[in-house]
Amino acid sequence: MTEKSSNMSFCIPCFFSSPSVSDDEYIPSASSLQGFRVFSYKELKTVTNDFKSSNKVGEGSFGSVYKGCLEDGSTVAVKVLSVELESLQGEREFISEITALSNIKHANLISLKGCCISSGNRFLIYDYMENNSIALAFQGGYESRRKFSWKIRKELLLGIAKGLAFLHEEVKPHIVHRDIKPANILLDKNFKPKIADFGLAKLFMDNTSHVSTRVAGTLGYLAPEYAISGHLTRKSDIYSFGVLLLHMVSGLPVVESNLEQGDTYLVKKVWKVYKAKNLQQLMDPSLDGDYPEEEASEVLKVGLLCVQETSGLRPQMSAVVKMLTDGKSSEQVSISKPGHLPDLMYLKIGQDHSLDSTAFSKSSTSFSS
Image 1 (cartoon, rainbow, N blue to C red):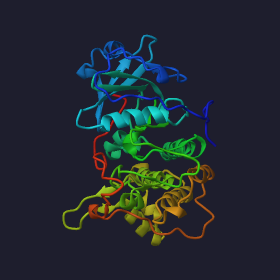
Image 2 (image 1 turned 60 degrees about the vertical axis):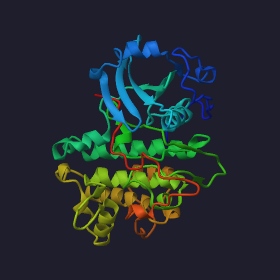
Image 3 (image 1 turned 90 degrees about the vertical axis):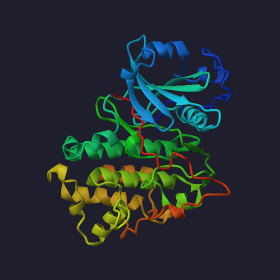
Image 4 (image 1 turned 90 degrees about the horizontal axis):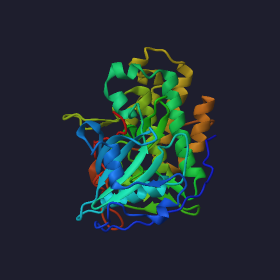
């Protein structure tokens, strides 16, 4: 089902928040990780041509991304996280990314090559992704989406599903990404999808049903039960994947704002068409009708299964992989209505968690030009 890492377990390196760390700080716990390298600040200045503006290829919630070339000729993306004294968010993202990615490998996960600590900055070094993100690819409108045939879209969705199944069910402890969306799915030179940006990721032990945490994610992709309660589960990621699937198949915006009628959510629109038994109406016009109708309908049903309001009814990602592989949505007779967050007033902010500043950020971190 998935391409497994040779080492299923991974260690969690310890880092200190002090901004006084020297440029060539040695991190013993991180340097011992398999395939993981600790870079010096001088090295990163060299590979990025002193962080020259022409080498800047992306902007994220907590920093910038620069293209660089290592001595061995390999191209990398250097993500710069600014750690401000009044905020620990950049530090949290730095530690979360390393904790999640430092010692696991999968064909559909971004590869973290190393890190660097220098004064108030933290640097993460990744493999470079030549074809940017799904968000940027779809941003160009009808003509840009035409490059993504039905076969390509299905392969992308299957790859993302395999990556999530690996994180949710195979890695120990399990990992919940918490921000699955087009901007966080990068594409390599062969258009293979790579799940990226693990700055909000959380670890789950085998006996953990949920984690109470601050609400973070992206409006439209945010699972409603998590947004309201702050209880994060693997089903929260599955909801986000379902929204991503519906977006990629239909080409429609996830949230459409209208001054008179208010926000329109894609999941609600898809449900209405599904109930009217007219799913073909949702297919992206840029596909020019070049897709197998029955298969396309089944894939849309998989998306609806993932966004059901009752989180317990959503399938596990391994089941989603099987459905996308077999071209059949499910043996279950009916699909229950989807959930969505109709208003920000429903967000529960308080006792055990608070609304994360990234929850509604529209910025995209990309690792390519």
